Length: 265
Length: 232
Image (cartoon, rainbow over all chains, first blue to last red; front, side, top):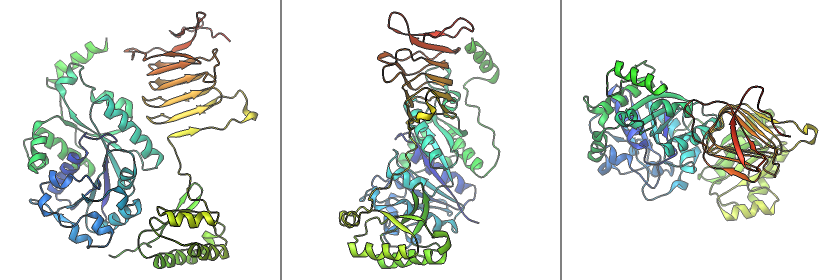
């Protein structure tokens, strides 16, 4: 078994890359997969905080790359899940401490150890982003149903195509069905229409996600949360399972169908 | 750390081959590079090689040695890319390039080919945000022009798809240039010196054609089969 390396990116900041990384890693690990997530945002590390592992960080990825520690020493085991590890970013260095070749090497070393390596990309399209996508077998682009986020996602998709990374899959994060219903927010269809890439999941807006992030307990482990369910579904799809998309409409199917007909006029 | 791959990575780029070095000891990496090349001497023969040496500090002698070694094996060293100013200076002294033109897919520039005079540039793909096409003639795009993408043409622009980015036709002042699209919702439309701001996104888009009318203003009208004529 060799691991699949998946990079999560977005272009725009603040759309939920890190949250998605933490939750997908958690969901995959809950499913029994061996998962290593890597914080690719050198100098602005967050993934450890969101996963509640901040106080366990001793070594980071730059230490691994510069040979100050072994790879295993930088892998922090999750508090609850035995098969989930985090390799944190360095807080005191910048992106120039890491090269694309370094990331490829680290991921290649991890391939034998894990089923999934999930890399949290920094925002932007500069070196940190390029480093994060270099080792990727698959790329997931996260966007919010907002014009600016979709614009940046489109740019990133263009770069990924040019880099011949294959077509990325799309996660639409923080969709608010009530706002969409009143046409106050882009719908999933609007976003897909523009980006024209495969959708792998829609995560509804949910306060519990923020609360979970602040507590260092990703929502994916909450069986009742709808956002958590959405992340678990994405994890299943990543493993090749065919999971139907959740019905996010606030009303029943019939009412929705009538509305859609009305809007088409 | 156990690595099965060599510490020096060689990959193909547009301008030949690129060998990337890490921060490990220079001697060791040079040996690794030589080993890789010796192993597949036939493959490397005649190749143009660029080095990305990262933060390695290299003197002229280091580079001369390597260059000579490479040329004995019919490889041409043409560029050394480095983050170290010392290394960069060494490379410059030897007349080596210190920048390799990275492929810039975001910007597609086409040279004007006089033999093709009057021929339009034909592009068949979705132009995503950040893409820019400049062409000294007419441009035909089969696919969408997404918001944030641009077409700058000296002639007319035809979009067989949704035009939602920026279009500038007649960029060098040709007021007879026109723009047509199946869905003309460009965020900015320019013909010669005339600009029209955001065109409303259409609920039910119809093919439209925009040109400069007899009052000298930019105007867009729905395409009517048989009726719409383009002034030349």
